[in-house]
Amino acid sequence: MITLDDVTISYGTGSRVLVAVRDFTLGVAEGEAVGLVGESGSGKSTVLRAVAGLVPYATGRITLAGRRVDRRRTTAERKMVQMVFQDPYGSLHPNQTVDQILAMPVAIHRLNGGEARIAQALGEVGLGREHRYRYPHQLSGGQRQRVAIARALILEPRILLLDEPTSALDVSVQAEILNLLSRLRRDRGLTMLMVSHDLAVIAHLCERIGVMSRGQLVEVTTATAMANNQVTHDYTRQLLRSNTGYDRSSVSTGELDVAAG
Image 1 (cartoon, rainbow, N blue to C red):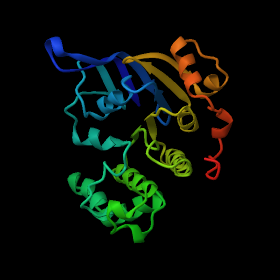
Image 2 (cartoon, helix red, strand yellow):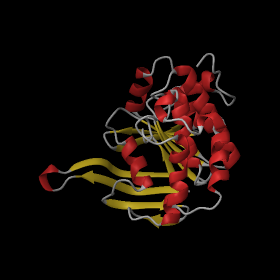
Image 3 (cartoon, helix red, strand yellow):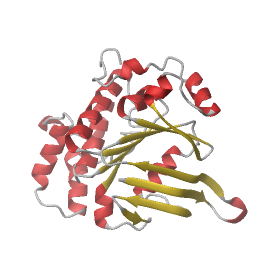
Image 4 (cartoon, rainbow, N blue to C red):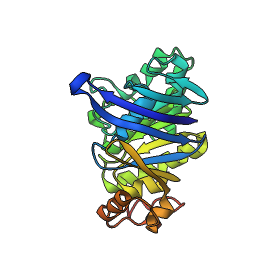
């Protein structure tokens, strides 16, 4: 569903050029969830933005659902790929109600049945009618992130990009959002590419994990291999040591324990 072949992403020109991602190659199958981990500045979020069409890429090829794309996306390509950002408060318009926030993508894409779509999207993320006419500042952090997820879902995408979707939330709320994303992926058959600093978060949602350092993908492994320290790259070992307390059993194939976080 997602293929990146030797993708290099740069900012600036001439002597001031900054290469944020270099020779990045990764494939994500339809219905699969893949995570990207690494230190701040390693290029994880830049990869997501390139897949979403939000930043240009200098060289290489990005293919979505078997078709090569560039930054100038068609309406159908933009509808197919939606993104959930790290800060749910910053990504929602502060002067719009939840109803207006969800109605906007429906209007932009000229979709029919807007009223039914909004009600369905809210129901899918566990929000009731009472939340529909509230403003973002009247919602909790978890509720705001649910609205952001509903906004992404309302266009019925096939690919969901997740940029640290739980890092701004309390631990118990993180568990609720991860359980929600797992259910939505199962029910909708979504393909997911997720970025997080937290290995336990990534392991709950993703079968495979790509490790990035200094703009390069240094290793692709699995959550089980990481939990058992069966990794090959020195940087991945350092990452595991820095995530002391990472416990794969706490994010088993079942639902996360909300009480325990």
